[in-house]
Length: 289
Image (cartoon, rainbow, N blue to C red; front, top):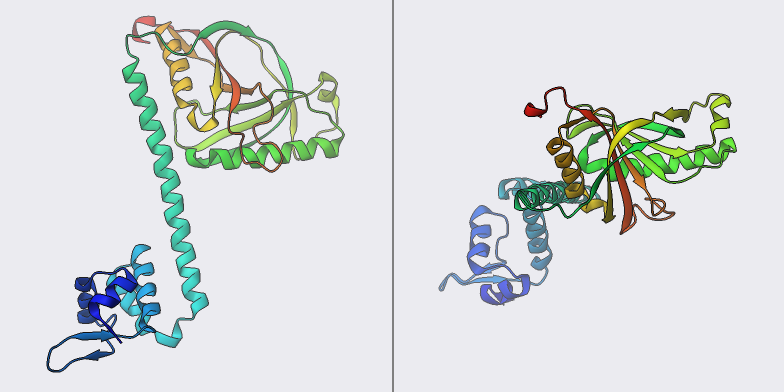
């Protein structure tokens, strides 16, 4: 048997917490000396302690843990593992959401730091031509899921074009269609340029062939870096639009100049060259732009 101090070292749990678990009936010592009151534990109780700590670390309250342990044989190892796996997935999802939120905050802070200073990005005004594309669209539930959905959409589009005998051109074009800013229900279209002759091809249920319209004026910015860190570039583009008295008149286009965003076997490339194009027009009231 192990004294409480030794058992606490083996389990990496303080003696104070072990006494607390004893009081709650979570983990009783195997033996308590009736003369000294010293608590003694056995090595087989280490597994019980590890289970308690794991459940606690995964967010369950001590009361919930006690209910689970009191269930005894009614709670199988498989059932417990399933519960832990679900909780782990929930925590991982929260971490991803918080990391994305942190990136957005950092992007806003960067914009504030650059107020009154030259932008690190060069924005040019230019005309953009008509482009014939094959595309598919979907609604992405949240901004944090954009990468996953775009990966799925591009994989589907490439496969559908191959099945239809259509050779896609480059670059890939992702379009964001929401007229108002939103972090939920994002209307996204992924497109691949194709030859104009495919406009007359039989209609497909899996993709649409159409023309992206030309615009006499668009704000354009070239960005080099990761897809995860491109928010400051987009904010700089929008800031330029506002400072020059323009308003958006079409969806933001994201052109993947350096190649596929999602090569075979990858969710997304580590670094890319991207051109952002935003069709614009002079504001009717530049003073309030």
